[in-house]
Length: 263
Length: 263
Image 1 (cartoon, rainbow over the protein chains, first blue to last red):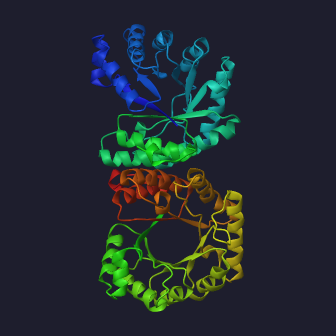
Image 2 (tube, chains in turn brown, cyan; image 1 turned 45 degrees about the vertical axis):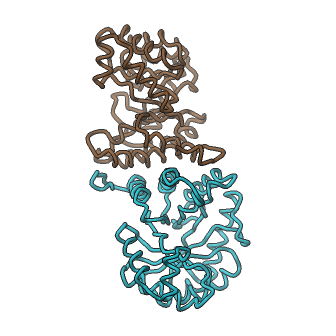
Image 3 (cartoon, one colour; image 1 turned 90 degrees about the vertical axis):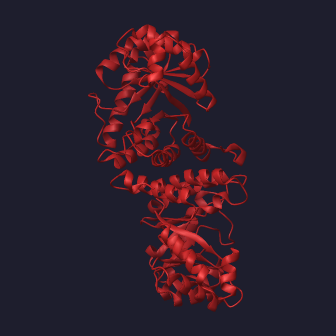
């Protein structure tokens, strides 16, 4: 289970300010901290970047890859920003992402073919609604594979994200369990070892006690690891949760155990 | 997932001394602390009790049930001690346990019929060896169900324990994963919702850093909960691990989430 740092987000004041000032230092520093904390890839979540999408994304991609060779996960809904990010990227790159939303299929998906990039597909209905049941999730997964193939992209390029729900939703627990089931069943259902990704922070979104949030995140990421998840997106600088994610991966996939290999 | 306190063990000096002095206070105090910490049942692990098996087990059972109505898990290989414990028990009781070892089948198993008690069956070969593969585990499970039925006991009385291996074994990780698979598959394989139990402490047995042990125990118990485990035996007074076990159970089986319901 590879760990994707979700720390570089434009919703953080320091990151927005870094962009506004075109000062790469705060982004570089944060990217270095993520790499040092054990990230296997770094998500660059810029939001829609309505103003100067191309120069803004180029700024972020250059800032991050000036300090690390880790894969970049370019996380924007703006096709212009996405294309600029892919153009600027020298590190391996993952497009984050598409869904069955027509806008995404027509403007983001073709970029995966043009730039030979991996691409995340969210298991969301075409209107971006979270599916109510696993049956609908599986139908959406099949439709995404079909769309990727129709765009001339190998389905092996697709990474499916079943969208972790907040526990605070009325049916959050039941939906979180459905996500576990989906992660476990997708490879068999699709007939090839499709990779899966999940964003952990959504589980405990909102205000709340840090210790309790960590506890729920740790038990859930352990279950995700056991289900065979390939990429976990998380706050890599939360050392308790990150250490647990490495331990869960060791338990789920490791070959040789030693206490020296546990944080 | 019910939590069984494994804290009352004769290998602890205070418990051995309590027995030697026939002073129930230390046993009572420990049982009370386990109940207060959220135990759903209390294991009384007396070892073989070669000296005075009957009066010794009676002492323990009386001491514990003088302070709690929780189910007792009577944990001895000595049939005389087991029978005395069952005789003294007023609380609900679980016999811990049998295997395909002939001695256990002829001397411990009949007690489950006589005292109308639940009984733990270990998935061990007749010579007490830990099975090498899941196929062997399933054969043993079927043989245990057959033995229980042959003794006139309903298979619903049986709780299967697949025997958690120490991670420090050469193939500890692989075996620990096999146990997860076994827990998940047994009900379907046996054709009825057979209950399962696992002892967590064996996973991290031996010397080692407490924080690392807790981390491995927490990720593993989360995976056990997701696999559908019914009874987790653990050090209930380890508050970090116990809180995680409750969180894992909430995640695996809970209906309604609230932060107030998380430790």
